Amino acid sequence: MLKVYPFFLEAAWITILLAVLTAVLGLICGALGAAARLSRFAFLRFLGAAYVSVIRGTPALIQLFILYFGGPQIGIQLDAFEAGVIGLGVNAGAYMTETIRGAIISIDKGQREASRTLGLSQWQTMYKVILPQSARLMVRPLGVNINALIKATALVAAISVVELTYTAQRYIGSTYKPFEMFLLAGVLYMIIIYVTGRGVAWLDRKVQIT
Amino acid sequence: MTDPSHFVEIRHAQKSFGALEVLKDISLTVERGQIVGIIGSSGSGKSTLLRAINDLDPLTGGEVWLDGVQVNQKLSHRKYEKHINQMRQQVGMVFQHFNLFPHMTARENVTMAPLMLKGISKEEANTLAKEQLDKVGMLERIDYYPSQLSGGQKQRVAIARALAMKPKLMLFDEATSALDPELVEEVNLVMRKLAEEHMTMIIVTHEMDFAASVCDRVLFMDQGVVVEEGPPDVLFRNPTQPRTREFLRKHLEGAK
Image 1: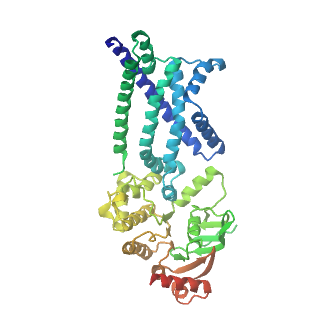
Image 2: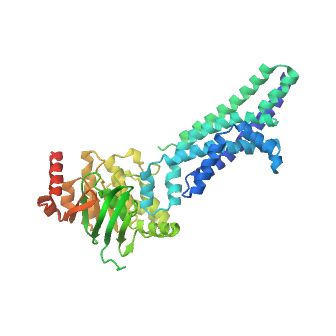
């Protein structure tokens, strides 16, 4: 039993790395998605809306399978880890698109009017008035998105990325102890999520308007 | 197109929201240094008219001119943006609900636009903030956030914020309507001070006494038209139109 710990710790690092890269890619996709959905160009709004409904309308596992197993057929060659990060990142991005868009449109329209009336441009208004206020509203719901994506990293076990879930499955074969193996993986997930949650709560407190 | 000789000129302003026509062919001129009040019941179109002056609610027909330049020009998006930002820098606007930026202190609210648009230095911005906040009696609250201020104090900071851009015209959209009665006077006082300095102002208001005492001219609007206009002592004491009389009578009863 003790012999498996180092492998689990290593696998936990892979899970953390996956989660961090997925979160970064998700935030980028989310910001772009929200910008598209709020664009004054109908075509971009359509693209943004299509992205969100396609991704949220299909299982993440199917998306990963299409990317990893189906990809080579259309000339996309990715190793399992790359496919995992891209698949999960694009998936998380769709949820973050809605989070970011929601936080932006929830700012009272009087704020935009006051800023535009002073002579600030659309971009200056976005950057100086809207985003600083909506960023504060985004922290907690983005934290929820990140919580979900950490757990979703377990899916990439299905495309053989050696992260926590895959490692647990692998050592069941040699130890015949599924209860302990999955429990150990679960505890490690819980630690990662707990620490992340504390981080989000800290950030949320820090950005609140005094 | 003749060059308008008036400081503010609204020509045949028309505005529809779908089938609803809220402004019906309104023409209006305001001269430099004049103070014009607009009264009327809710839904009369008075706020819409005011907001058309800086194109916040673009007209569906007609023209708005400020100091010889047409405000609501039909331009490509890019050119319009550049043009309108230029125009709006010259027009201060004060809103019913203050619309102060909650993530900025009074000082930052006042200096943000001048810092971004006028390229002034930090020191100049500091002097400007002190000067403008002093003018509205809010200097001792310079580093307070809007959430730490009363309604009247917020509105005074909002006025200072607009004044910091050194506008040549100030628009007031029911600046005291959202205030508790005891806080109205401190805002009115600031507006009176601006009147003494001969600031050109267009004031949409529900306060007849205030309009009567500061305005050179008052317009009564109803259902998208200017029913009657004139000097306050004439309009308030001897209105010629039945609708004006009716409105003033109801208002007087309400005030009792």
